[in-house]
Amino acid sequence: MAARTSRLPSGPSVPPLINEPRAISLKWTLYDPTLNTLPLYQMNIASNWAEFSAALADWCWPAQNLVYSDDQGHIAYQAIGRVPLRPAGLMGVPIEDNMHEWQGYIPFAAMPSAVDPPSGFLATANSRVTTPQSAYPLTLEWIDPYRIERIYKSLDGRDNLAPKDMLAVQNDVYSEVDQELGQRFAYAIDHTPAADDRLRKAADLMRTWDGRLTPDSAAASVVTRARAALRILILEPRLGKTLSDYHWGESNFAIEEIVMHAKADWLPPGYANWDALLTAAVRKGMEDGKAPADVADWKYGSWHTLDIEHPLVQFLPFLGHVAGTGPQPIGGDTTTVKQIGTDVGPSQRFTMDWSNIDASTENIVLGESGNPLSPYFKDQWTDWYNGATFALPFTPAAVSAQTRHTLQLTP
View 1 (cartoon, rainbow, N blue to C red):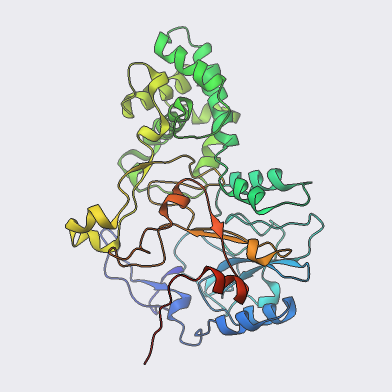
View 2: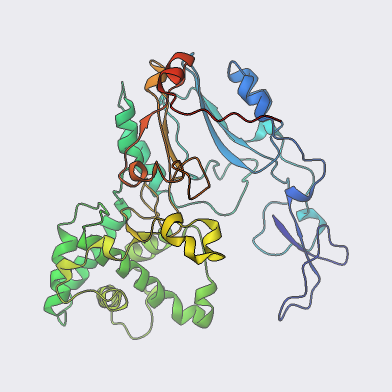
């Protein structure tokens, strides 16, 4: 999407904004009437990568990272969707000149792609798929690199992987950056003479932590809350009341860089050095998070929860007890392969075993039905929540053998 300010808006006009005298319009690929194809049928009947890739060329939106494998031993990656072509490059501000206006779309052949890489595997995790040298950078903002790095480290050099091995990667809650920051927080407390016994106990927890954000981990609570507090301590003096409006997809990476380089320019007023600031962040994190007197009892899952509700619950609150999960302790965070937040998580867990198709596995969050009264509304939740999955029959014989109910729709 692009924002444009000019006398002749190129997209739908936005209602007047507070403290914004200019006429603003938003241009979006969804509003282009010539973009109207989703080649799902052609993708479904493709028998090889050449046919599949040809179908992808007609994919208009939304933009996606797509990975592919087939029974002939080939794997591939392709970025799909129409991405605006801007001859003068990308800008992070409203567009006010024709050179930064859209000039068609990036050709499909120029979109990022890979086929049968030497590594033997492909992964995306919404990470950067271009380089600074790429002719078309696609966007100015990417997701933090931690998840993709962990996936590559987990798979590199491994052969003969089974579905259970892939499931283990999907459920991985180790965070290298959280463990790294935990060590730095502990060091800071060790070198702060005024640190009290509670802070020193927190330091001991972080120093011996394995970096896994499990629901029963106290160290995960300390590090996560300290990181959030540190962000406030660093940015509030610079952003003031606008801090709550500041969102950036790579903020975790930025905080890591700021902490590890420890430049004086980023040290807020009132702190003698970075050890003092980081110690204050741990203290503030425990205060803001209402940590118990014995910080060792501060289980991550006591406050890091996931609550999935049916969309109608906000209109029909009485459905809440049957149409939702209620707050459930959950491990992981946004830097772990198992990406979990209060309102985000993996939509499915799927593995395909081409040596035995019927041994492939599948699991979605709740169930196939959207009707809270259906037995299929939440019949997959327990497996999803516990990081488990189940066989996905594929061949007609396997499907027939496991069929327990048939729904027939007639005109």
